[in-house]
Image 1 (cartoon, rainbow, N blue to C red):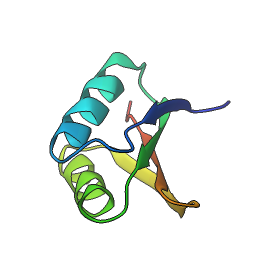
Image 2 (cartoon, helix red, strand yellow; image 1 turned 180 degrees about the horizontal axis):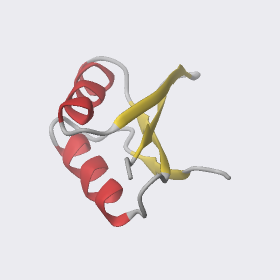
Image 3 (cartoon, one colour; image 1 turned 90 degrees about the vertical axis):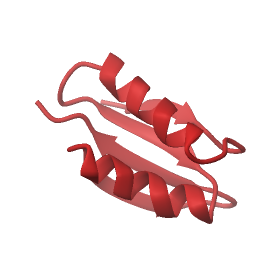
Image 4 (cartoon, rainbow, N blue to C red; image 1 turned 120 degrees about the vertical axis):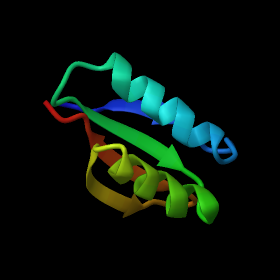
Length: 75
């Protein structure tokens, strides 16, 4: 199953975290969301904030000029 994609490149902190959390809340439990984040503060802060909220980080993949964060909404 392909993850739902949320492209937040160019979105500043903390807006990118808020948008990621809102999108995860709209998805059914155990759904995988792929979030595209810029290097620097976004990729450093968003995964930590999601972990604190109880979401499960599956992978963080470096891509050409951004990072692909795969996060799972728990059951």
